[in-house]
Length: 403
Image (cartoon, rainbow, N blue to C red; front, side, top):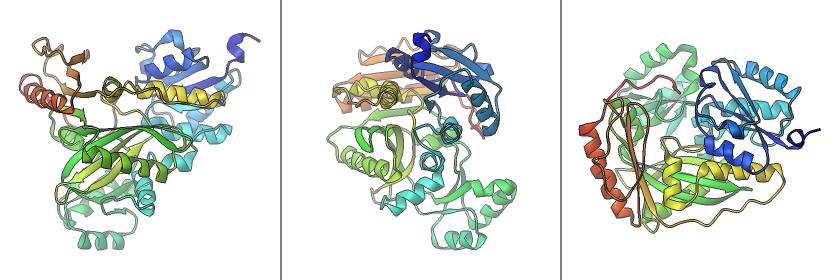
């Protein structure tokens, strides 16, 4: 038996091109990596030197078809753990763990981090404030909800990420045609009171049921507004001593403990109500935040969520303890926009706090880092205004996720 065959193996599933730092760190720490992705990403920018076996599959396979694919793969390949690098692969990863009796989140626990209804029900049971909501099952319950809870309301897909597929319902009469249109799919939605306010997110690291790290950030425009109306995406780190940051970190710990995450990374969103300044839990995911949030977290704190996630998985694999590395006390933020230009020129943005520029077709993006939250906030606001004028393009919001 070769050294490669003796090493434990992590099967990583990703139907999107992401998680390269995770794959590299797992390999560096001495585990084999099998990457299962889709055919169209066969030639994507994967760290091939870190991947022991590279396997592609057609898009849109059913969970059972993926299970059969992995079961066939397991005939000749040892699989010790399964990791989904993207949110849309979490359910199939949970199915694989259940089927192969592997450690990690099973299907019921995964619902707390994928199903907006499941996470709201559990959070409310544990005393976490959430906007009023109701499942879309019983029509009498729906009629009672819209008659007692002031509108407008949001009709949200239970398992889509970000703001994909969310519809704003202005009046009770407007709800029923939308449900008729959804047909048998309507039970996969929930109806929630629309709470005007500012959106925040906390990026977290947990080990053995304890939240070890949390970093609080504030979006510029709400992601739902950016996705549906266009505009510039931005986020920035909050002053660590501010009341908002301290309140969010306490609430984040409560959420993670309530939902039962054992070990891993999380991306959790909250809203601060315009009406009274109260925070409400919106949703969480057992994954790394998208839109280059991982890089923003790393510049601000020295903690790269992808790398720490890999270290957690390998520590669990080798039955070792995990320790969070020493953190930095800086602040960072990002400004990203879909661009009219194929290769937008950001060279006129020359402040010394710029630490990274996005290199992607038809996208403009900058990450800034400074010693003060106020300086980051100022730069993010200034760049957001300039991006809107110089680069910003708008395309229709997708009905379903796209790679």
